[in-house]
Amino acid sequence: MKTGDATKLLKRILKIKRMERGKLTVMRQGPSGPYYKLQCWENGRNFSRYIHRDQVQAVEEAIEGYRLFRQLTDQYAQVIIDRTRAELETDSKKGRHLSRNRSVRRKRKLPK
Picture 1 (cartoon, helix red, strand yellow):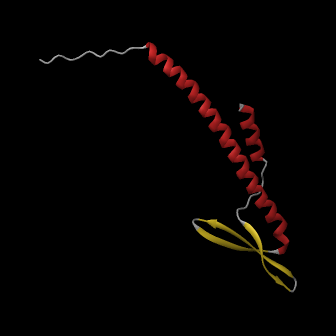
Picture 2 (tube, rainbow, N blue to C red; picture 1 turned 30 degrees about the vertical axis):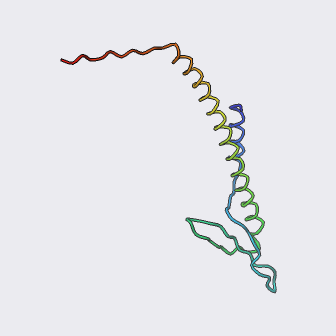
Picture 3 (cartoon, rainbow, N blue to C red; picture 1 turned 45 degrees about the horizontal axis):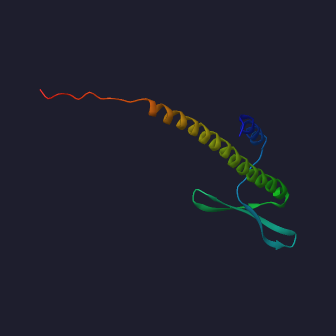
């Protein structure tokens, strides 16, 4: 992959303005409408937070932002991994070629 691919991915990542981890669910239905909670894992524990009805759309957008962030960072990591593997393969081929042409002799120390 090209260097431009990595740069494009980073630019897309920088455009994400809001993120939130977790899953938004309806806890129950009340007389005035549903009650929501956001659940996620933080510091090895399940964390729940109640979400006001007015904030549901913003929280959903933030969850989508985090999902996009994860997707883009996975793609970015793969671009860098592919580049690293290509560089190592090139270096490896160069190294094998050089090692066949070089012979290293070590002098033995004679006992005194």
